[in-house]
Length: 119
Image (cartoon, rainbow, N blue to C red):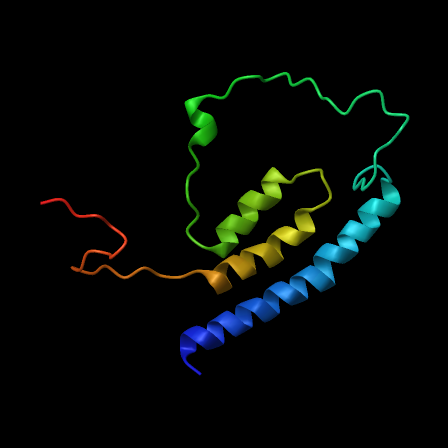
């Protein structure tokens, strides 16, 4: 087995472990504490599911996101973004998974076969 295949297997194991060991238990706790959070059926008593948004247009800044240097920085930013929603505990694990699946690109003088070159 090549090192790439080993990393892929390790990544899948880490993702499976995260999903079964952290994400699903959190979903169960949230479902128990907030019954309307993960609705799978229509609520006949709901007048509407429409939510009127206060911000109705997007700006250029909404599309500009700085990259993260590593999984730890990604985890920190994710925890800040999730502040107050009860999901911060997942950020560290997701950061570790991000590091595990990260692929370093190597510069090459060859043009990718997926790029159409015009002469």
